Each structure stands twice: as structure tokens, then as C-alpha cells.
Length: 407
Picture 1: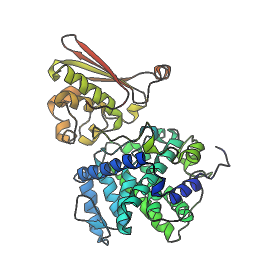
Picture 2: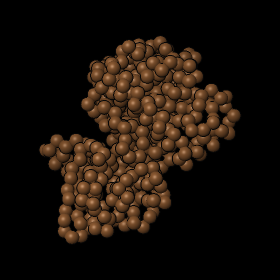
Picture 3: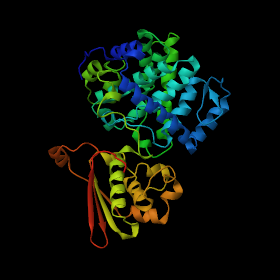
Picture 4: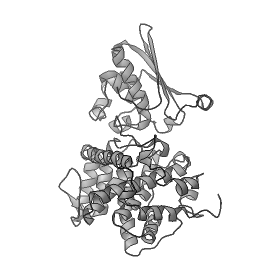
């Protein structure tokens, strides 16, 4: 890694502190409003998850001042802990939005931090929308800059990199200057955490909550005069050196707001199912095939599914026994579509996963991968998924999906 790099952290700080509402194009404002509403919706859904309830029960022990709202409850907490609870709820069902190029859930941590900080600061709607875009932009572009190297090492980008986005958003909504924002980013860098080994457990949603909490705390400390490294991203012992094998500095230097993430073709996508996004193309394609041919589970001999070799690294549960494990199981997600032709919140429960007919359907799923050579030769997008449904009477129905599209 080069010893001298451009001032990447300072570039993010300058962008975060200088951006105002008038800098947002009209399409960016419109698309990001939908994302903000989606964050609220998934928070109300996720606040009843067992992990969310346990976390609120834990936070209630401390008798904190009542500064900011905790969604789905009558609790009020200091902003950083409200961000922790709300970020956890937003990610609890794995229903929050995703951004394929950055391999990140961009909105939850940023929104959780921002809602809490904005409420405490009595910020305007324009200020909130501006700061939300600033935070999402910082998260996505920092993540894209790692070119997948960070994620492939086992880090959960939605927990690690979103810490920077959350800090940037809070600094923006509070109108903190560039120097203070730079300090907040440095503080956020030492709070950046989350590993993918915890996928399929209550701890995965906690990553999003902790990123939001850390973003608020970083801004609070920086505003009080707390110091940190001004080169937390590019430094010799900084984030890119420690957390990723490779990175592209130009992504940060040249593309912050140029174009905005919400304005690109590969924009942030609201999820059709409350499960890992890697399962969604296959689920949508199977739903289309099953409905088009009115296929019943008893008619199916087997279902062959093939994906990129990178996907099973997250879809690790081939014989799931809990709803949380089912979110990261290609076999269960397809089985749910086959058995009941849907996969919503009611299906990602321990009871449904363990139903005899669902477990029987899981046993019919043959999950393999195509080779890297085939993917490269045919220029498959990362999520390209091939399905073949084989019926007991010999009929076969095949399909391909490159992204998620509901019927």
C-alpha cells in the first residue's frame, strides 16, 4: 500500500460539512424520501423482534435522560442510545434497503443516528433529508472504494463503514464545521466494527444499531473538542490499511455527490423480502415459475439453483432451524416460495422453518455454483441466479434472474 495518499478523510469531511439542501438534485430528493420512509416502516416491523425487545430491556436498566424517541415504544433515551435501539430495529428483519455496488445496507444506521440527533436538535425536514443523503453517500462511496476487499475479509460493511456515514450525517444536521467533522470521522474509525460470522443471529442487526450509536457519539465527542487522527481512512495504520487489501482513492476524491448514489442506475433498492438480498433474484424467479405453471410442492422432484461462488459465503445455512438462520439460507427462501408462494415476516419464524412440509421442500433444493470462468466469460452480474424446477412427471421449467423483480 502506498505510504503517501491523497487526503481522503479530509475530502469526506469537507463534503459532509459543506453540503446543503440546494445541492441535492430533484430526483435525489424524491428517491431518498422513499428510503427515509422505508427506514421508518422497517423499524416499526423490527421493533417487535426478540433481539429488539431484549436490547430495549437492557437499555431500560440505566435510567438515562429522555432525549430522543425509540421507535415502537414509549421509551426515550439519549440520542446515541436511541440510535442504537432504532438502528437495531431497522435491521432486525433484514428488510432494510440495500445497495449492490457497495455491498451495504446504506440507510438504517445513517437514519437511526440522524433521527435521534435531529430530534434533539429540532432540525428541519430539509436539514434531515440533506444529512441523510450526506451520510448514505459517504457510506456507499467509502465501501465502493474498498472494491470488495473489506467485505471479502469477513467484515460486515453495514456495521463497519456505516459508522462513518452515521457520523457524517450527524455532523451535517448539526452544521458542524469541517475541522469538527474531520475529528468525528477519526473517532468513528475506532468504533468501526462488525463481522459476518454473526449473520443469522441477533448480533447482525446490532451491527447497524452500534454504527448509528457510534456515529452520534463521534459527533458529540468531536463537538466537545475530542481529538482523533485526520487521516483515519488513508493513514498508514488507518481503515483501508487495516480493514481491506485494496482500495480505490478516486472513488472518494472524484465521486462524492458526482453522481449521488440515489441518482445512479444501480441505486439503492427497497427489499421485496425480509432476507439476505442474495436470495432475492432466485426467489422472484421461482415465484414467477410456480405461479405461471401452478406448481404444487408435491409435484416437485427437485429444484436446481446455481449462483456466483461468492454468494454461499453469506448463505451459510443449508439446513436452517430458526427464522434468523432462514434469512441466510437459499434453500429455505426457495422452499418458502414453493410451499406457500410467499416469504414475508410471518414465514421467517422458527415455527415456520421447522414445519414438516417446509423441511421437506428444503431437502429438494440442490444449490451449486457456476465457475468463476463461466461468470467472467458471460459477464454475469454478481447476483445472476439460474433455476431449474424439475417435476416428477418429467417436465422442467428453467429461468434466470440477475436482480430481484417481484411479479
